[in-house]
Image 1: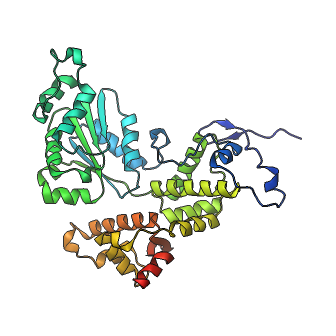
Image 2: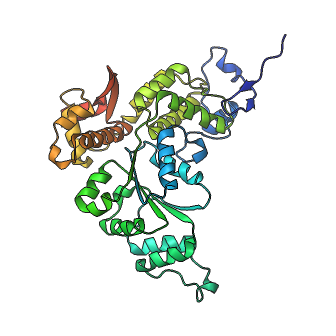
Image 3: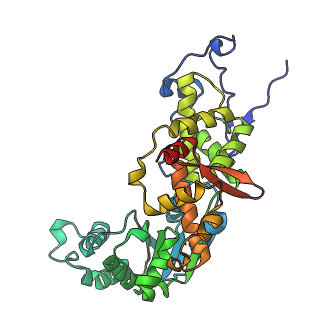
Amino acid sequence: MPDEEPLVNNTGTVQKPAEAPPEEAKTGQLPSPKRLKEWMAEIGWSGNPFTFSINPYLCVGYEEQRNALLSAIEEKQSMIMVAGPTGSGKTSLLKWVAANMPGGFDWIYIGKPPADAQELVDIFNNKYGSPWFLRLLMPNIKNAYQIPDFLNKKLRGKHLTLFFDEAHEAPLEMMEWIRVLGDLAGVSVVLSGLPLLESALKSNLETLRKRITARIEVLSLTKEEMRVMIARRIESVGGRGTEPFTPDVLEALYEKTGGFPREVLRLCSELVSSAARHGVYSITPGMIGDRIEESSRSLQPLETLTPMQREVIEFLGAGPASPGDIANRLALEKYKTRQHAVRSVNNVLIRMMSEGMVERIRKDKAYVYHLAPKLRTLVVKA
């Protein structure tokens, strides 16, 4: 018998074929439930590849956006905005760029905007502050007003990029200080947040909004990018390609998640756990339906919904609708443009879908949403 050719993954690494599953999976007997750790060991995985941990070296997609952000920083533009819906991969984008900064550039990633000026002071002291035994000669910052002079002394020709993630949550006082930082020579500020960030700036801090010279939007992965993301994560733990996900389940995954990275990871992790519990070694489209049915069993009480969620439920109670259909029925004067309204509605729908309140189907070239069966029952009863 001729030797089999080695299997090569898309990173160029030669891998051994996966071992066959236990004999009981071939004999027609009912498969045995497995603990997730045991199941992963049997298929050659060293861990769960679908956790929400962010590894910039596993970043997939958004090549145009990554290059645009990196170019804006290299050009030393002072104020840059990255906007996208929840779960679209903004944090992964920031951390990939931080890991690929050019020489002579320094950076600080700030996962949540500081609540007040003292927290901002602490960030710079932690990065550039002197040890206690040198503070008499090189004192640390005592208040935010000292930050400009402090940075001028510490940077010494380097260019500093400040990545402010979740910037839409920043209080107005902090936005004022961020504006000051963006005016400093040798500093670039990257504001990353939901699409509503720019309209919030227009309402509350137009002077900062006008300083934004580069705007980068992230939405979702393409179907091929999603497949590569799944394969790369599986290979990072010792697996091969997209196994054990069948080609048709990848199609169903994209239909259900729309290519939003966080939704892809969440659903993949649930499917892997489900496969282990049932002792099966191939993940099929039917398992996606099972996971969605399970997730809809424990919905949050209707009284806890936000006003926007209630409006969406009211609209969808009349039948399936697209984000644009729903936006057309909103009070558009609250939004900068209709496009901003559509983005806001889309963001709410994605969150509600992750919580099992709505489901999505493709209609022609667009997606329409409808109430999940469990929620529809609750709404009728209410």
